[in-house]
Amino acid sequence: MEKTVRAHTNIALIKYWGKEDQAMRLPAMSSISMTLDEFYTDTKISDSEKDRFILNGTEQTGKSAQRVFSYLRFLQERFGLSGHLQVESTNHVPTAAGLASSSSAFAALAGAFSSYYDLQINRQELSCLARMGSGSACRSVFGGFAMWQKGNSDLTSYAYAINEQPEMDLHLLAVELNPNPKELSSTNGMQLAKTSPFFQPWLERNQAEVDKMIEAIEQNDFTALGQLAELNANEMHAVNLTAQPGFTYFEPDTIRAIKLVEQLRSEGIECYYTIDAGPNVKVMTRLKNVKEITKRFISEFDNVKIVNASFGPGIKYLD
Image 1 (tube, helix red, strand yellow):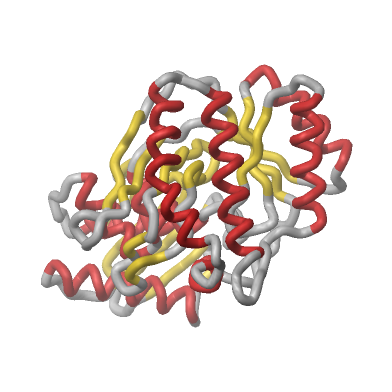
Image 2 (cartoon, rainbow, N blue to C red):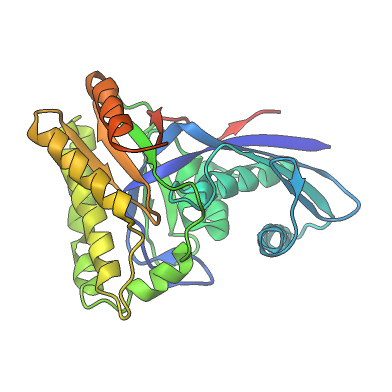
């Protein structure tokens, strides 16, 4: 028997950056994301005589395989199940380069596990299972705009859809400045960020920013959404810079990209940036500006890769 599931990655507009409970992956703040159509993971689970993890056609060993096997054992123990499994994943997301590849990977894995064992769970419960693999994966269960409420326990920390079929004219240009894996993992970055004197004040702003983002989504207000997403990203990276010791995911080209977005705005081309744990920049804009922004980035940067993404769907069961 085999089951295959597709999950799309998401980009946080209100960031998740810090855990209250490491073991249960309970976040320090609530977050809001946009699921993307262009980036996704297909994962197939099938019977096997031993545990195997195959990523993009290559069998994996070491830490990446152990993370998958540990997650599968956790899920089996939770539901009183057993047996060896083969996991085959095709990842259409640059891995560990700040594009939330783990969000689609573990949402697809959780979905494939649920389908393989015919668990008959709802999407809220599935988001809790995905969260245990990677926090942001809980949001990739849903399409469009999704909210991850931080909660205070396994059962209360889950994601849900805000609007899975948004009418907002919103495109996200994923600007890949550096395709290499980041040197500092998100997990370690989150731990360091808590040492910043500005981490707690940022937490205290979280609910107000979540409320404003939901209002922007409900009112179809691209400008309010873009301004708030850019502010929230800058808050996250300011916390990183002021940690003890301070650190940053920015590279010189990251700063150049930020400056270009600001220059474009000054010229009347409305766009905003957001940046996750990595050097790459995501530019939010309307469809009418996509070609001009893409042209400008290509003219300013050598060998830059740009993908135009819009709203993606929630988890899909392919067989």
